[in-house]
Amino acid sequence: MGMEAFYVMGSVLAVWALLVSLLGVVRKGFPGGRGGEIAIGAITACLVAIAIGTAIVGSIDNQDEGEDQDHAAVPVLPS
Image (cartoon, rainbow, N blue to C red; front, side, top):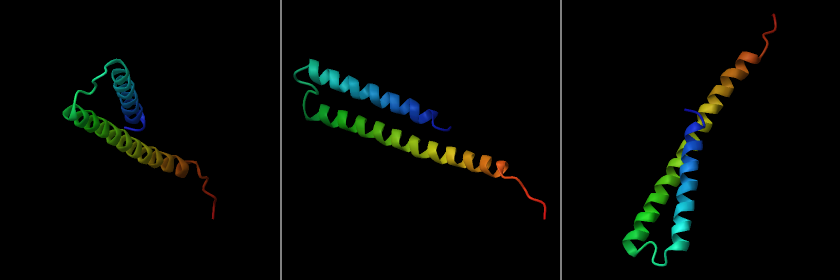
């Protein structure tokens, strides 16, 4: 999976943040009450958690791949 999932989810989170900001500026009553606030907050929290999770998993995957490459690059000296 690598970091590609993080790039996608980070982009989705950035677009969501821009959309929420734009709606907040353009619409006076946004988000329309307590229920809207909870919904926007819950969606934002989920997107943030998913983005952080994909970053962690992607970094672990990249670290594992790097370890395999490091071991392959080490020369073996004769005894």
